[in-house]
Length: 196
Image (cartoon, rainbow, N blue to C red):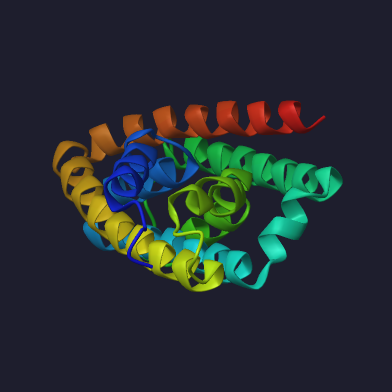
């Protein structure tokens, strides 16, 4: 396991977090509500990543990636969920925030990550490129996955702090919700369209 290509792996993981996607949008929207909401969404997303990691270690992700219909089903479900989140965000941009606004963010982060086909493909197609071919593939995927999850937690902490600082005021938060809602709907429609 000494031949794991650590530097390229870390570069690819950080690049993946730097390119905004559904997880980023959920964490950013949550962080605009409050720091604790941002943290909950980030923990939800990383919990979803842990599920993908375990699925990759035991071979389920490889099986799904080889069944185009299964991967398309995940993509359509993920797209529809993002459209639903987008509509909810747009609706929330005109409503007053409820006192329990933080409660659903963990679930949203988790569901968005679980329904993201790119997360499945990351563990099946990307991570194996960095492992030592002479070592245990499941063990190495597990170790690289844990590092990925830890780096993600650090990234979401920074995103939460920055977004909450920028969008902390109520008017800004409402504009942010509207913008993120449109983004969610756009990504969702794109995912569904790709799968069809």
